Image: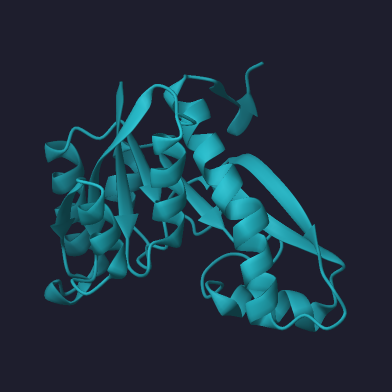
Length: 208
């Protein structure tokens, strides 16, 4: 049984999707063992406590730079014996000290179809604002491994929704979360925990 550690910063809707999937028996071979937050007032911590999952708070503001903060996160992951790290609305880009030690063991969800509308500065509603302003007809979400470059790791799964004429960023965000993020993130986690993701030449493939 693999130890899944989830990193959060805010409300924790993707964390809740993972918790619900685990309770429904849809995450095979893994268990959420700890939730680590960069923000002491994140509601995601309440979601964890309500489901008897241990929590840790490592406030970003307590550290002077990304490297020292990432080292603190790395130490916590090691202490928790993490087999898989899931970034669920975690608002800090981790330094290479974490991404290299946990290469192909950190999964993130990005609310667009990478390589569109991704990279540094593209997060939250900004992604959906950019997609709408470009006039795309479909959008979606990407589940990918994390490396030292923002949103540039190997893609595991992608899902698509139609963009409607009257969409606002908020409406599109909700449609993508409900129809793609909350379904594909638990699926990717389960595939990882069952050793069903293969890396070939830096690309991720799902084994049948």
